[in-house]
Structure formats: C-alpha cells, structure tokens
Length: 492
Image 1: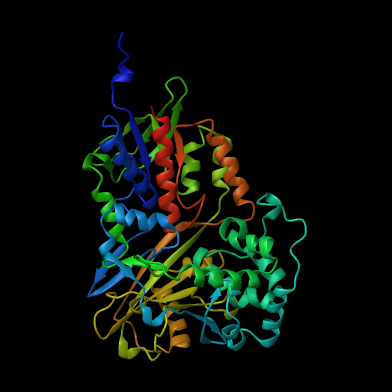
Image 2: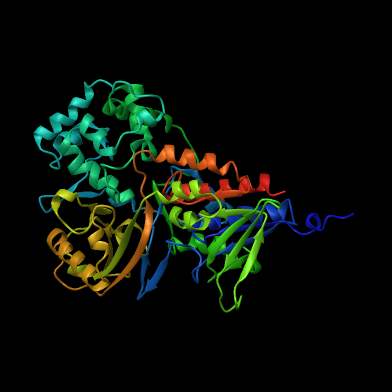
C-alpha cells in the first residue's frame, strides 16, 4: 500500500525575509534545483518587501543606505555569495585616499592613530603622538606590555567570559575604555561595554592575552606576520569594507531574484506555530491578507525561523517553553540612521576620512557619523556630500524615542559643533529599526549553547539571524546557509 505522505513533495518553510532568511532560502532553492527537485521551499515575510534592515534609497542623485552600508571582506561568506550571484564586478571598495576615521575629544575630531585596532595599538609612533589620550592615559595603556595574564582564565569556558569594559580597564585603563574602546565598539554593536561579552564578540583579544600575555605585543607580532605573509601574494585583494555600486540592496535584490515567485509569500505574518509529534510536521498559522483571504495553515516538514530571537520565542512558546524562555532573554537595542544631504560648499570640514565616532563622555546625542560620499563613490552628485549619522543604541534609548524631526535637529546640532555645518541640509532621511541589534551580554555563549541543546529535540527546526553567532552581514549569511544545510540533512 502506498504511503500518501511519502508521495507528496517535501516542504521546507523559512520565516523571515531578511538577509539570514534570504540566504537560507537561496541555499535550499539551489539544493532543490541541482539535487532534489521534489523539495518545495516557502519563504514567509511579514512585510511588503524582502531584505530586512538592508534598504537602499535613491533621491535627487544621492544614494542612501537605511541599514548597513558595507560588509567586511575578512569574513568570507558575503564575498563568496557575491561571487556566486555574479555580482563581483559590481563590488565597490572604499576610497583609497581617505582610509582613516576620527574620534571626538574636547569637541574636536581627532584622527584615530594609524595601526590602532579597536582596543590596542599595533604601531608605536602614531600611538605616542596622538592627542586622543593624555600622557597619563598612554602610560597606563603601555602597562599592558608588563601586566600578567588574568589568573584562572579557563580555555573558552564560561569562566573566560569577561565584559569589554572589565577587560579594557584591566589591561589598558579607564581612559582607554572611555576614549577609544567604548565609542569604537559602540559604533559596531551599539552596546553597553559593561554588559558586552568580549568572548562572544571579539574573542581574539582574550586569545591574544592567553597566547602572548600582552595584547599590544600580540598586535605587533601579528602585524609583522601579516607583512611577511602578503609578500609575493597574487590575486584580488579587497579593502576591508566593501559595498556595491548601487548600494547594499543590490545583494538582497539579487538573492530574491533567484527565488521562484511561488516560493515567496510577502505581507504574510506567522501568528502561531505548533508541532505534530506523530507526523513530526510543523503547522504555521498565517494571518489573513489579500492573497489568503481568511488566513491559512502552512504545513512544513522542516522549519527555519530567521527572526529576532524575541519573535521566535513568541512563536515557540507553545512548542517548548524552556527554549522560548532562553530566546526571549536575549536583549535587543533599537537604532536609527539619519542620512543628510548637503551642498559641499556648506561643509567647512575637509571630510578627509570615512567619518567619526563619539565617546559617551563627550555628552553628544550622535553615536557616530559616516562621510558616506567620501567612503564610497557614487553616493552624492557633484558638488554635494552625503553624511549618515547613527543614534540610539543601548546607551541612548531616549534618542531613538525622538520623532524624525527632533532626531534630525539633534544630529544637526552635533554636526554644527563638530564639523561646523551651519546651513540646513538639502534634505534629511530617517530610518528607524526597533529592537534590531541583538546584544551579546555576559553569558551569551552559554545561553546559545543551551538553545542549541534544546533544539536537539527538534532536528527539523533551525534558527538563523544576528542573535546567535555574530551580528555582521557575513555572520547572518553564514547562519542562513548553516540552517539550510542542517535542514537538508533532516527533512527527508
């Protein structure tokens, strides 16, 4: 007797159409086309568009990024995906002429010393001559050269988890934390350094201490090794940050274009999920829209939730309350970007860098600002400049709460004081991203390990996104690809 369940196409559902969900759906679709034509893929997205926080606008000759404006080339996933999609010719490197950034001190933009990497210097002379730190602060930072390793640090265990603030104060002192580490890392994670887990975000610094005792010595040695390794190499070598000639949405649009139209369900919210123990299938109850009418239930043999952890927690509460509790405990911060278009003549600053970050101790309302039209070509028409400010985050939630007009006014006040811009912009555009940045607090890796253990009871369930193994674009792509590959192992 034939089994009717075995005769129907197997179905995999991906919930969430941001970069993680798109990467998962893309990988599944490639597998269906080349290996398993019977596999059916469905991508469900609550909004009217795919791409999540990656959003590019064009206006009056300006190219505006609402979310990420670049990805790093050091992690291979985004670059490899770019090549797979045939987009390599559209890659855009950063401007070779002004590859530096600034930090605000005393209301002025000071260049970050050449060779300074987030927490520590890899070159001696630029560190000595910078005016970002006082001489007392420099002397305290130099103590890293002689300080012992932290006693009792276990290899990659929970005992090795330490906050960014604690690590920097211990190795380099308070001034290094306030003047460099907090603003530089804050510009990446929009996080509170007192809460941020260094092992979950930048483990290489802990590893440097373990291996070399001194972080500065480790940086100097790594710089010498890198100089030796690059001699005689050939092939394409990209700048650290890359984008696309038409903006970051080039990538997500290309990913979406690879998916058959029947694969994608836009404007469709998953309201509830249940798991049938007997059939081992997932049932997704989706909201009503112009397509579904009164709503429907989508059945799937495997499921990927490419959503913020709190959204996945809400859906999984009735399936596994312990898993849902772990997911809901991952905190998030809200951020906003403010793009401001100016006539170049209205900006007295030379804009001879990629932008600046602002230490919290400077008491400004802007976290950071990118000189977008300097960083990448084609972002502003001739005679104009485009600046992009970041506000909100874990340390300034009150800024995110402002309406668009008040937010623009606050950013303009900072730009007036720091860059000397008195005249109004040609236009300004605000993009708000509520609860978009997962916060990797102390204990994050242990929590993710507990989540993974709970998932072992549901081998056909995968999680993807920026809440688990990295917040950057390559990390999110890797999470989507990994989820897809795991589902391909189990969906039979």
